[in-house]
Image 1 (tube, one colour):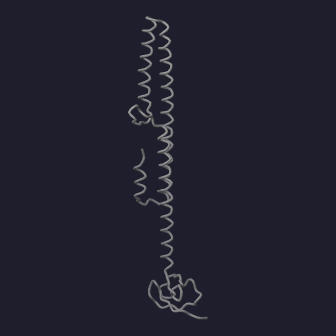
Image 2 (cartoon, helix red, strand yellow):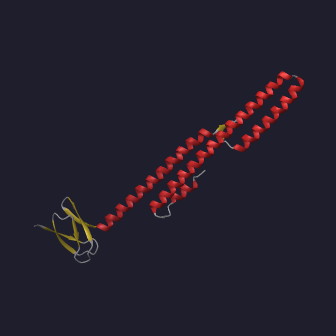
Image 3 (cartoon, rainbow, N blue to C red):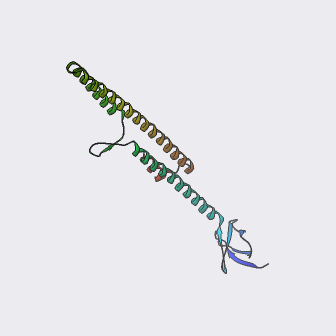
Length: 189
């Protein structure tokens, strides 16, 4: 059996190992080594270093996977959120909120009732316009309130999914203080 001379990567002690060996344990420091063969050269590497490098790569891949899931969720929410936007006459966009809808509907309905009473005393057929006006105002208010409710429900679901993803990524990182988690917590809206 042909032996090759190597040295331990941990303590530097000389090692004589068979040419076909892939792993060896140093007789001096008990370090476990991997034997690498490149062309006509042989070298050793600590198995612990290989294990640490592998674990680091696995953690990095998991972190990237978690970040990409979080980014995907954020992009999906942006698209969903844009569907709830209402555009004003000046082109400005806003999200639906119940308070302005109820207030606006109330004002329009009061005006419609006032119009109906006033029109009924002057020209009774015009009172029908006031009744139709009130019906449209109330109908529009109901539709607006339902849209605001759907938005609030979608927002709540988004926050829950986001919280779960962050909690899962923290659990996998076992409490490491990572900038991506802080970024993820900041981006909630």
